Amino acid sequence: MHNTLAIVLAGGTGSRLSPLTNDRAKPAVPFGGKYRIIDFTLTNCLHSGLRRILVLTQYKSHSLQKHLRDGWSVFNPELGEYITVVPPQMRKGEKWYSGTADAIHQNLWLLSRSEAKYVVVLSGDHIYRMDYSPMLEQHRLNKADLTVACMEVPVEEASSFGVMSINEDKKILEFSEKPQSPATIPNNPNKSLTSMGIYIFTTEALIKALEEDALNESSKHDFGYNIIPTFLDKQTAYAYRFGDQTGRVTQDAYWRDVGSIDSFYQANMDLLQPEPPINLYQRDWGIRTSAPQLPPAKTISTAVNKHVTTINSMISNGAVIIDSTVTNSIISSNVHIHADSTISHSILFDNVQVGENCNLQNCIIDKHVKIPAGTEIGVNPQEDKKYFTLSENGIVVVPENYQFAS
Image 1 (cartoon, one colour):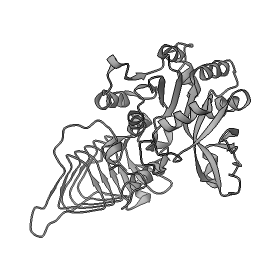
Image 2 (cartoon, one colour; image 1 turned 90 degrees about the vertical axis):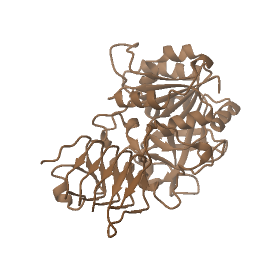
Image 3 (cartoon, helix red, strand yellow; image 1 turned 30 degrees about the vertical axis):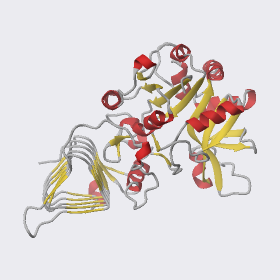
Image 4 (tube, helix red, strand yellow; image 1 turned 180 degrees about the vertical axis):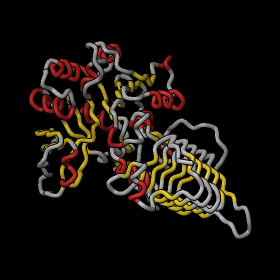
């Protein structure tokens, strides 16, 4: 992997995740009680042996940069290893990044300095575990200019992805970004083969494609819409099926784009299944993150007739639960839940304070929120939507630092 550079795209606005992205970039949104979304992509790089990583940031990036500083300062620059945050440099003119391809085009100077033969382009806002080394090996064996990781999805969901057709050698024959009528897999009209937004390029071919795309004023400067289709006409592009080869991680074939409140909520709830579709407890593929020094979680029963009940939930370090019931929920660090409260099917971010006799259902509570005693959230949707964001599936989202009326 010494001749390979990884570029993580982490500058999107994540507007569909609002209000969770009102003050942070989408890759910096907390996930699973103790992680950030970007931790999954960076962990994949770490375990895959990718030790030269550029993280391209843009939108409200302070929280993300702080997290990378605190949790990911693990590489040794003396050995040529690094994770470097790259905000817009305006090397190609006075403009911000205007698309996924333009973000890398504006940093071709860093690409040329790296002397890398291969470039792995990744998104910082997906939840999955994957060893990239078998994909890179396939790219080398095929002598490909581009390799695209792909997976099968139900055809009714495929219009949200880039959809491809391949031959028996896995060469990409057709590619269409978010088509209204997605192509299906031969002999399986119920499934389509879709892009995961994971690309491996030969550096020389990538630079040429980006420079040509930059001259096209009608281009969206996007990999799916513009860059990949040009490879089908001029250069060799292959597909890599996610889960085909295990590499150094047991494949669970779980991949989620947590781009909306409902998809984000469901991905968190997936972790609570008796046999979760993505295994955070695999010892040889642990998810790295920033881990502050906190005491263990604690439950307190204040009297004989008082008790704490936690059912099918994840409780993080520093949490304190007093005489309350927590069911099917994710409780993050330093959350305090006071007596006689009920939390069910909910996600509480760091430093949330829940007063006595509260009832929280089907909700996401962002950081540093103090919920007054006797508060109900998720019980009356008509009342909730007067004050909070309500998702299509009825998940209530309370924004960071929200102040309840006294």
